[in-house]
Image 1 (cartoon, one colour):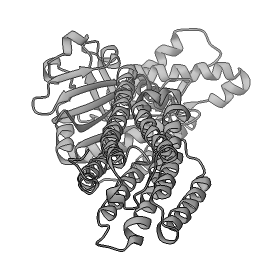
Image 2 (cartoon, one colour):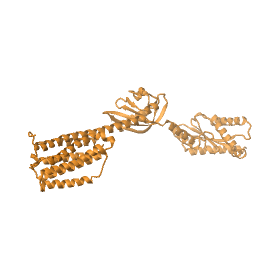
Image 3 (cartoon, rainbow, N blue to C red):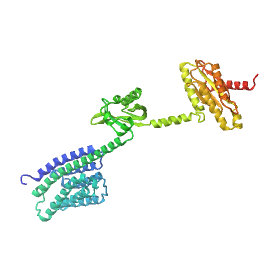
Image 4 (tube, rainbow, N blue to C red):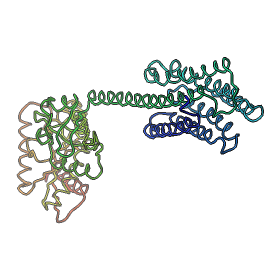
Amino acid sequence: MNFLDLRTVVFTNIIIFTICTLVVALLWRQSRNRFAGISFLVIDFAMQTAAIFLLAMRGFITDWMSMTLANIMAFAGAILGYIGLERFVGKISSQVHNYIFLTIYAFAFSYFALIQTDLSVRNLVVSLGLLIIWFQCMWLMLYRVDPGMRPLTLGVGIVFSALCLVNIVRIVEFFTSPHPVDDYFHSGAFQILVMITYQMLMILLTFSLVLMVNKRLFVRIKTQEEKFAKAFHSSPYAIALTRLDDGRIMEVNEGFVNISGYGYDEVAGKTTFDLHIWAREEERAAIVDELSRNGKVQGRELHLKKKTGELLTGIFSAEIITINNEKCVLTSFSDISERKRMEEEILEMSLRDPLTELYNRRGFFAIAEQEIKTANRARRKMHLTFIDCDGLKWINDNIGHEAGDRVLMATADILLRTFRESDVIARVGGDEFAVLSIYAADIDQEVSSRRLQQNIDEYNESGSRRYKLAMSWGMSVYDPEFPVAFDELMAAADKLMYANKKAKANPR
């Protein structure tokens, strides 16, 4: 060791510790949002580097700074490093005992550095202090950590084991060898060997920390990939991944296969155009426009086609993402066709009269309001016929409500046979019916009245009953040139119907 002096080794340590600190700082920048505790490791390495620098300045700065402050910083940094490792592995514990050790360490080192100067005892204090902290680090990395994480922390634990061993050797050396020199930079070959060993172990510690963090990052990424892959393939929704530039399908899940009817081999490398999936071009154009503007589409209801040509209704979402520096579109489609059919059936039921299966008053008025708007735009007339079943109360009271129901169903059947398929027929009250004739240009009210009466007569002649079916009706006309509210149109037809009923009751 005569070719090296301790001051040269210390200056070499400054360079090595600085490089190691920068590496750990870069590691923190890479993983600061993923793992806890790495910032403490950066502070630890920075304090160790600062301590070595102060040590190298001995003779140029006060002994208090180059000895006491430097060593207290190194010890405090080691404690912070231990705290960082605990946070990283999720084994946070109370540090009261280490704060007590720091206080004792600072007092003991200051005493033997400034009051009762003794280099060998100072080296013993440093060795004992670092052994206590580094043993805790070793124990944490090798035993306290969860078994599943031990393969990641093993390398760091072995390096701390080597650091503990170096300090044990230093303690043994204190009790077995003479120490005539009280100048640290002339301590001899043993201290040079110790400093060089610290250099090598610091490099190994930095390397093992980088490996530990990156292995954990790799495990997390792999776990997330597996999680998202399972979510992708097991989702009941149809999910597809396509390239943005040419729209070619890169991957689909089982939900896509089940919903669309296409197999994996049929969609690979194809576009949605090739598969003729889009049912309506205007919906596809709207999706492309929104994607280009916002980068995503959320919860849009649209229609797609299965391989069989069957139309599907669903909720469509898409988002532009980047995979391996390539822009892709991740899309999902939830088939709600059955739900839509049920909703339509429920809506239809709410608009239908359960006895006659004609539209009820609510359904009739809803359709009529839309047809009035259409008639106004097209400048076409409509006819409204208001019909009342004569004598229904007498039938209900004297023959029974079952007979009354048969009368209502017969009335519905007669109206369906009398008027056209394009006409809207409804039961708007107990014994009241209404017919809206939409295309009225070729309708003759007298012809319609004769046809209705003829169908009533045929019904009455078709069987032997205790009653004769009779109806009264009135017809009004909606003219876009003189628009009125639909209620007024109904009132006009109702008035004519009652005039008809009164005329039959009081014939001249």
